Length: 135
Image (cartoon, rainbow, N blue to C red):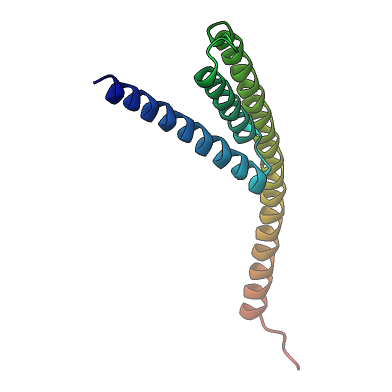
């Protein structure tokens, strides 16, 4: 009975270790390929840090007192995520401003071309209605 309980606890622990490893590596690879958003980098590093903390507490529970580090780790994680989100928001806002300016310029050019088209059609219809005579 004791061996089954011990085996079950190790199974759960290895599941968490594997999950943290897969999530951390996935997000680091995701950041490596995209490099436009730093949030996957922060999350991947955070998962790997938790993996190290979890492994250290599995093999030597007295090595790291993780109870005291949880609050600090969560604060740092939230701080970096807020920083990444604010950078993403400011880039999106700058992109919206740039695209709005381009749209306004394109609308001005389009209205100018529309006026030129109207003038051309008016001149063409006038010429068709009153043809020049060669007498």
